[in-house]
Length: 137
Image (cartoon, rainbow, N blue to C red; front, side, top):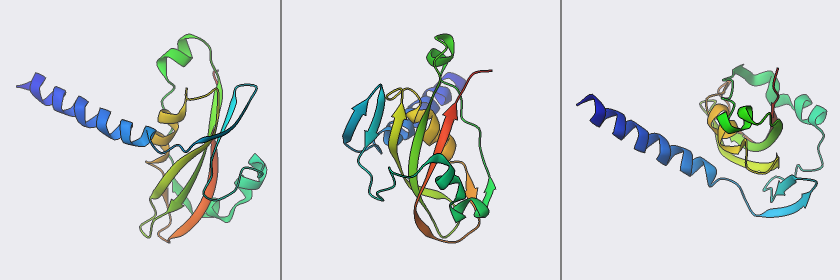
């Protein structure tokens, strides 16, 4: 019976992560392994510092560290994923969309899964962005 429960959990987790992976838009540019995706908010021109200065960071209550993808760790791969998102009235990140990734696709699912667990002060707001860096030691 325990094996049966594990199988259902694995299918549910895969379905959830597959849904997350579909939140990236069409590629708009590719330069030196940096992939930029179409943004509904038009924030590609913002620097990391400008995004950190965004007032949404004052509303942050809790974070969840991303899991480093096993293959990336085994191969010593480092990179980042930039996400755009809205905050729901209850403080959850929603409409999470990948807008930039380096290297392409390696960290996207881990970034989305982690960021989905972050919480903000309850107040709806839209079109924010954040960069999650994946660095080893």
